[in-house]
Length: 156
Image 1 (cartoon, rainbow, N blue to C red):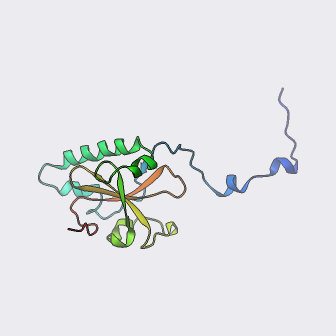
Image 2: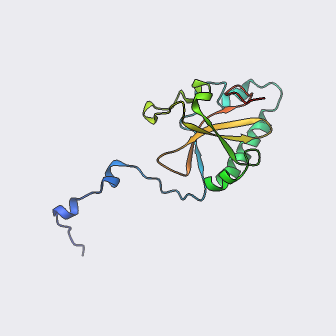
Image 3: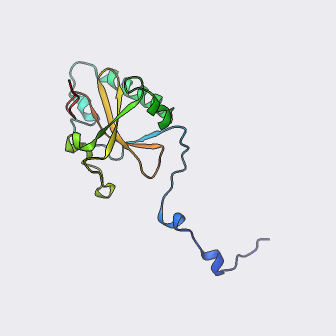
């Protein structure tokens, strides 16, 4: 037989955390990638690969998914300790990127010119750009890709 819980004021209390915020319960021992805010600019999303006539698109897809698998088996701390050319990442300010990279990002995300974006290298010459989620420390929101060195100044 079940007991009825009385509607006392003590039973009606909720913490601000349970009402006002969504929390991420993913452990920080690995990371995952969200493509929710990927740019609509076809030059910097996966539609770019449809334009390639050299037959390299399958190899690029393979490199991308192999790299995503590898990155997702590491923590941010582990990736930070690696060199950018050896499975790690670098950060570049949003102000150095083409503006269209964040064209699907909601205004409430408050991205500014000095917001640090994460840049992962994959394959021989490709980049995946995104930012770490504020709400879920294990998540990276992918904003786009740089397949031809045109998204930002890569130096000489």
